[in-house]
Amino acid sequence: MSLFQNFTNADIWSNGKGSSKFDRREKTRHYRRAGGACIEIYTDGGCSGNPGPGGWAYVIIKDGVLFAEKWGAEKLTTNNRMELQAVIAALEFLASGKNMEEKITIFTDSQYVQKGITLWLAEWKKRGWKTSDKKPVKNQDLWQRLEPLAEQFLVNWVWVKGHAGNKYNERCDELTRTAIVSL
Image (cartoon, rainbow, N blue to C red; front, side):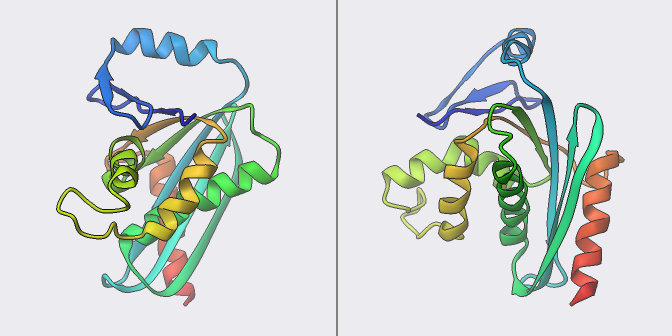
């Protein structure tokens, strides 16, 4: 069973099968009761031109301490592919380290990623990987990699505004720019 948590300013809880409203205090209590360590993942992706050379990055904070950070780059890609790749790389890193019982909050400045995983993915699959406009879902290959990775964890998906002073989101942006320049 797929379990995706989505604590946003809109107070939407989603398990990939639609959404409903809950009181923010109730969601927070439920999430804290889940137990285990607290892992925060910050991700970012971007391109110089779209499409163009692109980079992605993640920063992982475990129990309030910097645990890992990494970046990567591709010569010809899109912003959305890099945003997805950042999340995939972070979850692959955690999955390889046997952190499966941990609760994770993923902070992304990409509404495409946050809404895609919590609201749109289940519908795309029901429609045979077609959008509501009956067009093929872009980046299907990455969505198909992300979904089984995310299902291994109890994930809280949070959208954050980019370039708004969030320390770790800004660090991801810096690493993403480093990645692009490395090409």
